Image 1 (cartoon, rainbow, N blue to C red):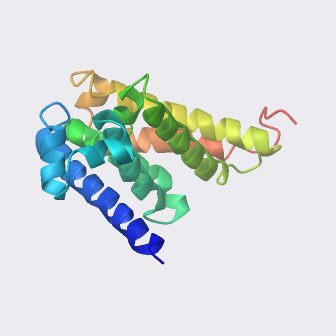
Image 2 (cartoon, helix red, strand yellow; image 1 turned 30 degrees about the vertical axis):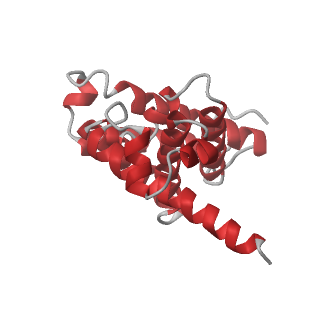
Image 3 (tube, rainbow, N blue to C red; image 1 turned 180 degrees about the horizontal axis):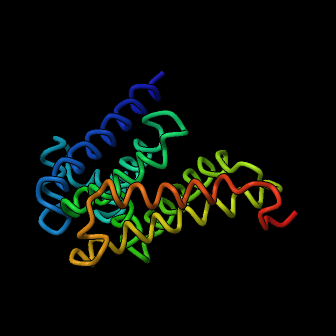
Length: 197
């Protein structure tokens, strides 16, 4: 009977660390947020951050993943593309709003960050594959979904690096319109349009 309170305490500590880290990363950015500050905001010993997440970088990746998963689940599936694009375009307001770039760039050698990348890729590919009309088979649906996701990841990574480029200068609605049309065309490819059967 002692396991349940301990499990609840662990879950609540983990959640407190995530909440504190999300707030501090947003307020101060990754580099200016210390492990000590996160632990103090969460009201726990900083050793617990390492116990539950392994490193500050892994915690950062988990915070970014939770933001991305909120976008995934926060509305009807048919509106996912627009929600995701709007979240990516919001990243132009600063790195704390960067939905995917932070996860992709985070800790190339961190096992936790790599696991988060796999988790997000799988979740979003599955969601887009479910919208792929006329797919010859599951593999084709996943291919088309992953192509859309790859394009969105590229947009997430490139536009903060080229703020004066065409995408950076464009109105978000213009970018949204172009990408939405192209992505929907790929996901809704009609039978006989070159899809291998």
